[in-house]
Image (cartoon, rainbow, N blue to C red; front, side, top):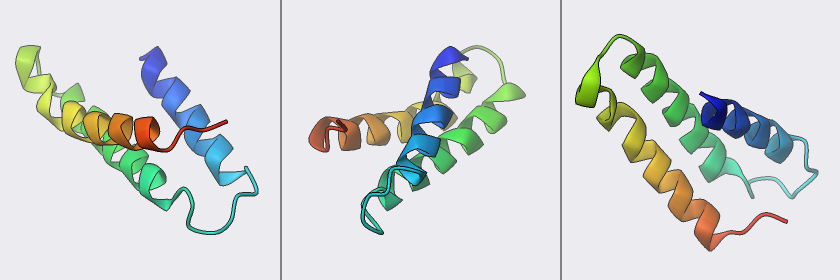
Length: 70
């Protein structure tokens, strides 16, 4: 759960960064999808919990790797 909390913190930092409008739209959208995935996975067990979370997490990871944040 710490990863999720760190992600929420990063999302808040992106929003408050003062970066030009639209710079962080994609990762903020992906954080929203990740939040939905965690909510959906809460009622599941075992490997069924993975798909709702892994898709958005993989996309977010790809974005972060191609757009490093200072």
